Image (cartoon, rainbow, N blue to C red):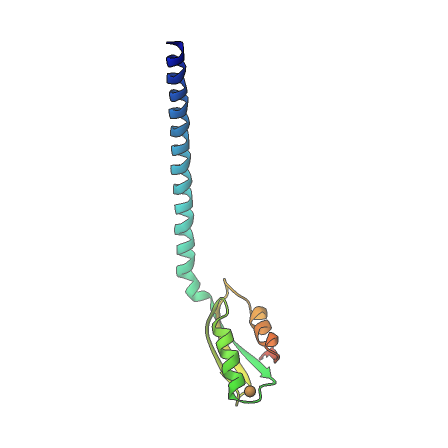
Length: 120
Ligand SMILES: [Cu+2]
């Protein structure tokens, strides 16, 4: 009998804990979802935060070099578009300022063995 009461009490405690847990979970989800919406709002405005940078590239020997750099840039996080010209010895890169920087883009080109400097 006493044992049954104890079990009932345990169940009540468990139920109370579960309710608290559920409330915390719901509260946390609501909080995170609000955060999510804020992030989405930021994404919507980040279109305006795309910048275009002209980079002088030294060391390209042929158009193959140019396409090698281009494909590497296109695979780089934050890069929206990339054009590389062997004839003009330059790269024109559009990137999302929230996801990468000019320095990181210069580094990608430098790591491939070329010299890269921002024009102008
Ligand atoms: Cu080449």
